[in-house]
Picture (spheres, rainbow, N blue to C red):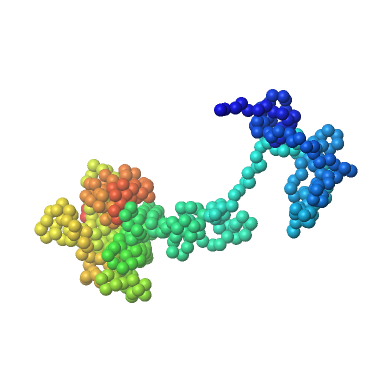
Length: 459
C-alpha cells in the first residue's frame, strides 16, 4: 500500500547544507527529497586527534573543514587543488603538484538575474554552457580570408548549399556532396541600351545556350547596338562549347566591322561566317576527339542576331532561333522577322501542311540549318528593316518562343516598359518560359529601337 513520505530527521539538507525545520519534507533551497535521507548511523564518527584524522589504512586523507573557525563555511575545494593518491597512499602518476595557497579575494558580483550561490559555496544553477561546440563540418563562418586562428584559409569556392564545405575540381562539395551551379546556369548582361538573360531551364542538366551583346558607334558617331544568341545542338558533341564560341566570335566581328563603316547587313553576313569557322575548329580539338563516338556529330549550334542603328534594323540567322519586332504602341501589330531552318518550316513553305499541323508534329524542331563541321552547305540568312515607330527587338532561342510562338503571343509576354528597362524585360520573358515548364534552355536579348527621324519602309 502507499506510504506517506517520512519527515526530515536531520538538521541540515544533505544536498546543500541548508538548515531545516522540523517537519520539512523537502529542502526549501534545493528541493531535495528528505524522505530518502537514510537514518543516522549508531556509531560515532572518527575523531580527529591533534588536527589529523588517522584512517585505518594509514592514508593521510585531507581534513574536511566544516568552517573557517569563525562560524563561516569554509570554501569548497576544487578537485585539482588536492593531490591525487591511490588506495595505498602513493601519489598517482602525473598528478600535478598542489597550487600554492592564494590570499582570499572578494568574489565578483553576480550578473543580474543569476542564481545565488548557497552558503556552502555550491552553485544551485548548472554550469555555464560553452560558447561554442566543436563542429563536425567546417565552420561556415571561416571564409577565404582566414581561419579561427587568423591563418589564411585554403583557396577555393565555398558550397552554396551547406556554406561550409570546399568545392572540388569536379564542382561538388567535399562536405555535403552537393553539385554546385555552373557559371552558365544563369547569366545576365546589360550593355548600354541592350540586355540579355540566359537560364538553364528546369529540365536540362546544363545550359547549352550562349549570347553576346554590346554597343558601338558608326563612323558618323551614330550609336549601334548588337545582340547575338546561339543555341547548342543537344545531339551534337560539346554543344555548349559550340554556342559559346559562335556567340563570342560573331559579336566581336560585328563590333569590329561596324565602326569601320561596313554596312550592317554585310557585317552580319560576315559575322555568321566567322562564327561558323569558330565552330568548325572545335571538331579538330583533342577534347572533341576524346568525346566523339561514331554515332555522334561534330560540335554544332544555331545562331540568330540583330543590329540596331539609327532608323535601321538588321537581322541574321542560321537555324530555328528567332527575332520578333514588338512596337511600343501595342495597337500596332507585331511581327516575326525570321524564318526557321526546320522541318516544320519546310513543310509549311512547300504547302504540304498547315503551320499548326507542322509544329504539332514530333519532327517540328528538327533543324535543317546549323553551324558545324558536318553541316550542309552554309546559307546565312540576313534581312534589313526600317521600322517607322519605336519598339523593341526580341532575339531568342526556341526555349522562349515555344511558350510564345506567334508574334502576338510574344508581344503579350513582353512588358510594356521593355524599351526603357531591357534587362527587366528579359528577366520577365525568361520567367514566362520557366513558368510555362522550362523544358529547354532559355535565352533572350532585348534591343530597344528608338523613334526614327523619319518614316521608312522595308529595305
